[in-house]
Image 1: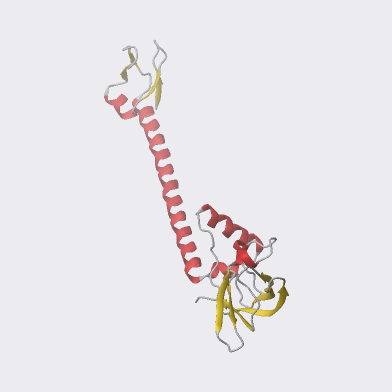
Image 2 (image 1 turned 180 degrees about the vertical axis):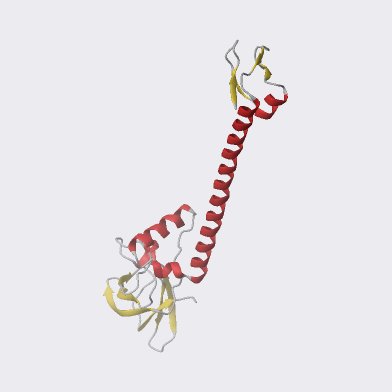
Length: 214
């Protein structure tokens, strides 16, 4: 409880039980004035009970808050390890929330995979000047969840089938500028890719594959 000194009008907090023990006599810690607090013992006890009740309510609130946070963390861990969040993320608002949380936690890419439910629908090779070529095609996600975009591998071979060169392309290298790889590859959608560069030269054969993981 708070009291005010009648001389210097300083306000300070006191323990109601201490006031009761000293029969209502208080000494101001600022000016030294001794004065009597005109509050009866029952009133002091009532004030003490009220303040103690407020403290108990606050304690219960923090206890419930801690329990809620622990349950929330447990649910997030279950969704993470079972990859259930990747199925829920087919909804744009949920996917946006997951991305926001992952960015806040410093996790750059929360999506699982890629796995073998991703396939190359089609691809074509177009010659360019200086014995270079460009490979264009489309990817399809036949799973029921949002996945990471895969790394694409191109193996160049000669007329005898021997490997000349092996190249790899990350999503940032082959996706259009309008597509953000961190948004994830939605199920039932097609993604176009373009592979090119100084290493992709004219060859007798080209093998385009997706590098996957369990």
